[in-house]
Length: 384
Image (cartoon, rainbow, N blue to C red; front, top):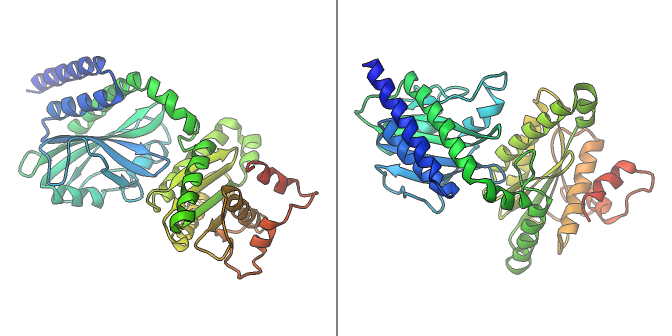
């Protein structure tokens, strides 16, 4: 029986690889991967999702098999905050950080799964809501970075998935990753124009485009626009003491935290401006919500194994900061707040406009930096 099952699964892997070899686009590869994985796992349903780091969302690309009410084969906008399903962040930075490869795990409707950090009650609730009994979640890793996940489920009453199924799903996810990679080359070239290659976050160009669009809406409709500027403390010391590989690892890890906290602000953009500077552009959220996300980021960054936390400055049109007619003005305010947070070694974000009309952050942003303040000039230099 075991040998027969092994033969069937080997054949399923071969068929999956053959189907992926004929895929012409990443979406073709995703479709083939979900369909073949569901059949190979004897599941009633399968989905493939991608982690959009810059928005902090796990976006469903394909649903395949027996769909629950509200599910679509190729949904236009089905996504979930990674803040609610943080296991994906642990693919490379959690239980597997010490070595080995990311491995699939099983979840059940009863909440007896074995995801990184313990059972995910969010996934258990989703299984119950959609009439499914168990599922296997397998990380998909491309180029050493968590890309998304393969999700295969069985209905209530069907045999539950076990450890051998999770092992098999890990193999299928690796084959699917190879298929996606071979069709993604051209798409990656286009994406890199707006993506930071080290962290996978948006880059300065993406920030400029998003801010210009957002401030146009602010001028025409009064939509709130907020900017969080972050400076990662202690990066130079990490590079000097432990080497640039460790420093790059710190940047990647912080980038993941930025994506995680940015996910608290739907529709936001998490980006790396360059060097040790990062930002979040939030549109439509109240400033208190933005400050709460920045505060959580400060708390999480302070718990990193290396580095010295982060200095965060926040500027929002929802606060008394005067008219904001340009991205330059918002950057100067957020920069000034971040500079003060850094100078004061603040463990919480500093918010422009929160100390009344004579707020020193507002005055600092409207005044030229002291000629002998090289650190100030360095920060300002990133924002023309």
